[in-house]
Length: 209
Image 1 (cartoon, rainbow, N blue to C red):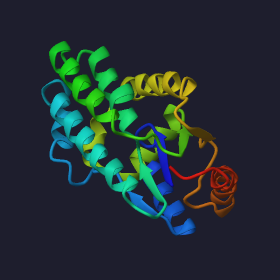
Image 2 (image 1 turned 120 degrees about the vertical axis):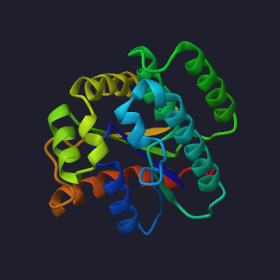
Image 3 (image 1 turned 90 degrees about the vertical axis):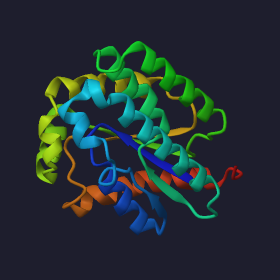
Image 4 (image 1 turned 60 degrees about the vertical axis):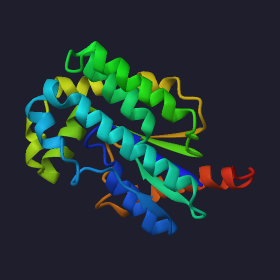
């Protein structure tokens, strides 16, 4: 099976992916952040580096999906290829950080890729408001994330709301993490595990793709 976690910057995707992988004995595919050569430059000058960053993430995510579908074990993925296009690239275009020529070039590559990409069997969306996102971003202390503006996070959240409201590619589990601390509170993590377990048991009754 292919499980994926979606959510805004700071919602806790990577941490939850790691914890669920350990709990269920799944493999994990995490987002390429630390080895991304464009991320620091992007937050310092979004307009200059937006296209480079988005192409890097898109290629990385596409390779992850191909690897996941060739794996005979259940894999949990940190962020989806759809978020790259429908959330981040779209947002950068709308706020004028990605010009029309580059945006349509990017969409052309994305459309070619998703013709051979299968959606995850289960998508877990971590819903988090701005105060929660800021709290987690500050706690992890990545220097380059200090430049993230609140209005940038807010517009991303709005795009997530629109995308999730129309998501119909597979099973969807929405988890509101605003009042949760699944890192330090075992009861909060157990609640998430129970919700995921219910979805998985339902999926196991269906034929594998």
